[in-house]
Length: 460
Image (cartoon, rainbow, N blue to C red):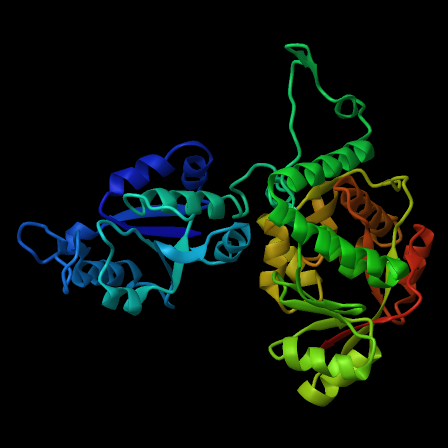
């Protein structure tokens, strides 16, 4: 990912970003950043970039010409117009959701203001996003830019050493991070909570969630209210847990947004794969949800035949797959007999795309880069893989024909189930109707099937 900063103080940006995690990530090639001095593009012989505002008033404004010429130079080799962010108190408030959105971009351009601002005409010409980091005024845009780059860059695969840390820390699922402790076990007569010394991972996960909820309720009641709303939906859905586990887990893992909810009429959206999850109690409500929230939908997962009917009638979509959902609810981890299972890297991308029946190579890339795919190796040769889909289900399972019948497929599935459980989530997966071999594997592993099918609805 490449960051470009238009500034009057390039040394400030370079010095601020050159240290710690962001500096190391740039040296390793996971990200790049450059600060470009807008003064280098002025045509004024003394190097001025500012002038008095028309109509009078205090202060000076940055002129449009040096800003525009600087922008043109930065973007001249880009194939498409990049997201260009102007840091201003008048912008939309920056948050973790926005950071995730920006982290999907390949190029980001930042414009740092100074004095009383920048001529409106050039802003209209180049800016795509107006962003504020808070309701206060600073002397310039450099500090807010560094805040945003830090928050965005750490979501880029490879920037953080621990692949799960960016997904489980502060603001994950609208909860603040739980309290952390390190050695010594007793300091100034204050002891580390015993549960953290117990070695019982399930109890630790439970304790951390409880602490996150308590801390959020006290310190950020606004976030706590959002969390409570999601939990109320989860409670409704839990009456048929196997059938609605995909929606429950999407909310519990903080992966989705609630677009609509009233009773059992619910619309959720998972932005990573642009997937809508929908359930409706009647054809009338299904048609309303389709008209109001699914106009731009290209892929829908639903438990309701009335939603399928509404999508067929109003959007010309049709059922792509009919699947049955399986859930692992036991506390015990499953045995993994094949011992050489490792997290995959982009070194294995070609093997996965060659052997897995999926046209979207970028999706596979995303899963590998997020650290959510694992492979089985025989004598250091990759012979199979499994992963976690963007919406939370276990899947992406494949075993090389030469190694089938050796129990590798079961080991891979058991491994991914144990992995999901270790994160404090409920493992589940989906099996296409008629896939007898997979059905037998789910039953053998002790997974329970939902009482009704689910439908993947799309255009292909």
